[in-house]
Each structure stands twice: as C-alpha cells, then as structure tokens.
Image 1 (spheres, one colour):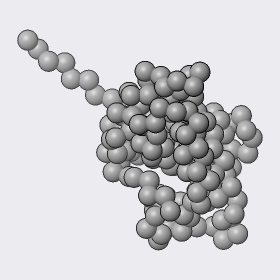
Image 2 (cartoon, helix red, strand yellow; image 1 turned 180 degrees about the horizontal axis):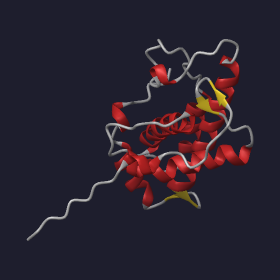
Image 3 (cartoon, one colour; image 1 turned 135 degrees about the horizontal axis):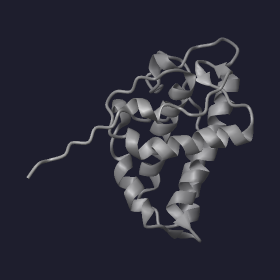
Length: 173
C-alpha cells in the first residue's frame, strides 16, 4: 500500500487583507469592518497555522495575524471547559481588557522584536489591540456557543488550540 504525503506550504496563509497604514510595525485598520475582517481571517487560518513551527511573515498584516493566532489560542484554552456562555464571555472580556506589553524587551511581550517601539504611540497601540481582542473574543464565543449551549465544534477548537504556533504562548500580565 502506498502512502500519500500531503504538504501544505505556509506561504499560502499570508494575510489577504493588507493595510497601507502601520502602527508599531503592525498593520493598522482604522474602520470596524476591516478590523473584524482581519480577525475573521485569523480564525480562518487558525486551525492550519497551529501545525507550523516556522512562518515567514511578509509584512505588517502577517505580524498582526501572528498576534491574533496566539491570543486566540490563549482565549480558547481559557474557556475550553466552560459550559456556560455568560461565564465564558466574562473570562474572554477580562483577557480583552488586559494591557498589552509593548516594549520589545518585556518578557511578557511574546511578539518580541516584531513589535516596533514607536515613541508616542503606546496608548494608540494599546487601544487598537484591545479592540481587536474584543472582536476576537466575540467571534470565539460565537464559535463555541449557539443559543446559550456549547457547540460540537468547541471540542475541535479546544484540541487545536493546545498546539503552540511557532512555539509562542500568550503570557498575559
């Protein structure tokens, strides 16, 4: 019996949504529709990207995807055993409100050197990333729960979130 080996090139998973604007090295989307779009795109590739140890990012939009993938994995792990939608939503809301380490030397900043320090933009990047985490939390709740009950997909998402993308993990504060 012959075994078929399927290889997936991670270069096919680069951000479709591109932004002309950047903020501290990340793609900056200033309207709500585009922000939700990049979050949905990150969830679309989330399952696939957890299998990769390396990822050649091509620009600020890809760096933003890396951030969203790691945060999504942390959020999913946080609520993987929750059966109550309100309790899960409350936990994810707390994560969304956490401050984001922005200094590249900060041990809690899992992006390390990918996030560029830009004087005077710390408050703006904090607000931007908190907004994206809020959208991400709502989308994850929508995938985990339907009509207040846990979906069958929740177990699948939880299993995938256990894998570390590029060895990165969210440390929070």
